[in-house]
Image (cartoon, rainbow, N blue to C red):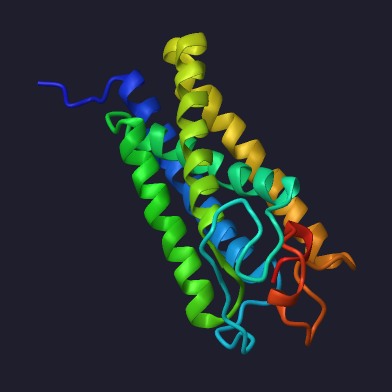
Length: 197
């Protein structure tokens, strides 16, 4: 009896391995971007721990959330929904959204504990929305591409990962930094993404 794996099964397995590897790279970049703003990772943050509990509007010493920050928070988690949808196709959007919310709460808690950024309920809401948008985009891709979805999205995710790594390298090499100037407490500044600590 032949034990050969059908070509279609082998391709699906290869796509799954590739997507799993790309997801791991994405998660590493996500941790680096969220916790250390693409700067040098350190477990010794500042001495300011701030929490913004009122989403979107001004409060707790912060201005209202800026459009750039909100778009960035959604965009950062769109790949989360796409990758999980590809790796766990039987999961519903609500399950992926719930996991995204848990991960986002974990990020906000870690930022508070390490004092490496300001914790904001708005981020949790927008990150979760981004993951759900990713699931919706994947559903649209499946309708349009059918059986070719995995191979096409594996190529798209690979290209996106290369671009993300190149952009991260350019950011690190460039003069622009994400966060408030050294020595300035983030809670004294307006709540805008490009200035956030």
